[in-house]
Amino acid sequence: MNNFNNKVVLITGAGNGIGRATALAFAQQGASVVVADINQIDGEETASQITQAGGIATFLSCDVTIEQDVKELVDGTLAIYGKLDIAFNNAGIEIEQSKLADGDEAVYDKIMDVNVKGVWRCMKYQIPAMLLQPTSVIVNTASIAGLGAAPKMSIYCASKHAVLGLTKSAAVEYAKKGLRVNAVCPAVIDTDMYKRATQNDPQKQQYVNNLHPIGRIGQPEEVAGAVLYLCSDLAGFTTGVALPVDGGSTAI
Ligand code: NAD
Figure 1 (cartoon, rainbow, N blue to C red):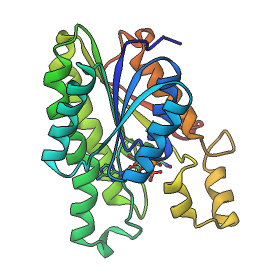
Figure 2 (cartoon, rainbow, N blue to C red):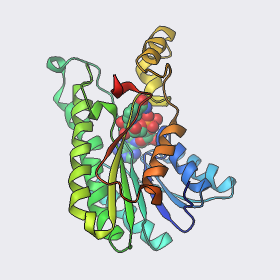
Figure 3 (cartoon, protein in one colour):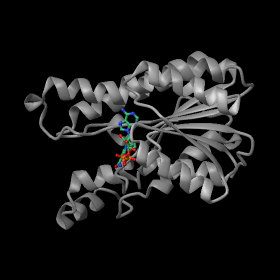
């Protein structure tokens, strides 16, 4: 794996789950990590785990639905570390659990505001800073729900399809400027989001395990591995891709 010494990495939704695992992984590879999250306690905990292990990290509070927060997040990163090399736009929510016709407009707006507009806002403020570097990389968190249907999660599904639209368009727009833009598409990953969805019900959990040809759900560290690969020089010719991290789910 590449060494991320001297790289500055900004991660949203880094207070928990996939974001935290990726923050820890980047820090272990030598990166300076800006841990961004709406949840101050959880974000500070991630930063503290990194610094206690000898790494470099700063927590910056950010709600990706607030433009000023996002602007201050990028400005703060530049003020503290002087540059931005890598961004992992990962903050996302699920909430909705109903068929399309039973959906609620406020839920629609909330999911889209965090999952789509949040990623758009982040890229809008990150890209000008990243173009100052000879090379830079953005990875956005989509989902296998960005690649196909997600029954009873149609709004979430649409939001993750939209993340791929933003990812691919930005990848093409900035390909000649040294900026690569890719997405990861996890299947079910063992985080609080999964625990909320299955409510610790062993039957539900077994059902979800069986959806994956590999016979189990994924671990956040396995998504982190894919993100680090996409951000490394090993992926220097890779831009505009939606990489499934899914135990074979989309191969069926
Ligand atoms: P999680 O709920 O464990 O963590 C999400 C983090 O995002 C939390 O720390 C939360 O505080 C933060 N967050 C939420 N709203 C925010 C906002 N408005 N601004 C800033 N931070 C905010 O979830 P996770 O499972 O780690 O999910 C991370 C990403 O992965 C999400 O985009 C999710 O849609 C996606 N994903 C998750 C799974 C899964 O099964 N867990 C599968 C596919 C994709």
